[in-house]
Length: 238
Image 1 (tube, rainbow, N blue to C red):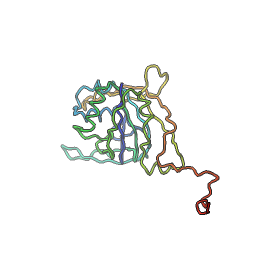
Image 2 (cartoon, helix red, strand yellow):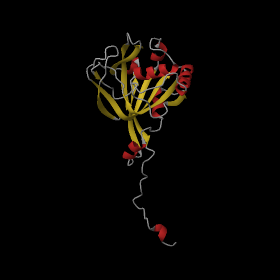
Image 3 (cartoon, rainbow, N blue to C red):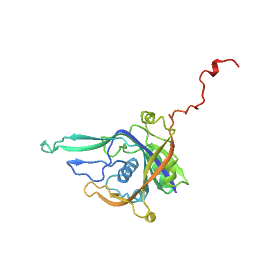
C-alpha cells in the first residue's frame, strides 16, 4: 500500500458535512468527501461519474494549524427571475493548514499524484470560493501506513504561527484517521461519499478516530541557552 499526501492551506477553507441553504457550516478539518471531490476534479471526473474506487481509499488528516472560524452573510438572486433569495450564513476556516492523506494501491496513488500536478479542473478547499495558497501535492510515500506517513511530515504551519510557538522546540499535533472495523468505539461522520451527482448526492456514515502526534519539530524554535553561559568570555584573553 502507498499513501498520497496533500497540503491544504488557504486564506479560507470550508468543509461542510451537514449544511442547508440558509446555513452552510464547516467542519474543523477537511472531510473525506471534500478531499475525494478534489481528487476526482483533478482527474477530470464529472459529478455524475462513478467514484467507488476513490471512496474506497482510507483517509486521514493532520491538523497543523487549526485556523479561526469566521461567519459571512451571502446574498444571491435567482437566475431566471432575478428575485432575491434568502440571506444565508456561511462559515469558513481562516488561515488554517492541514496535511491530508489517502491510502491505497500503488498504481492509483501514482495516478492521483500525476493528476494533482496537472489537474483537469482547478482544485479548491471545500468550496469554489476557497482556492489554495500553496501547492497541494506533497508526493507519494510507499510502504508506510497512513498514520506513519502523517506522523513523519515536518510541521507545515505558516511561519507566523510557528513563531508564536518559538519557545517550544517540539509541538504536539492531532490527526483524524478513518477507522477500521477493529478500532472499537469511534466518532462517526456522515462523510463517506457515494455519489456527487448534483441531483442526488449521497453520503454514508464513516468512523473517525483521533490520534495524537507528539514531538513534531518546530523549525523556528529558539535554542535554549545554557545556564552557565558567559557572554563576555570571548572578550577576555586566554
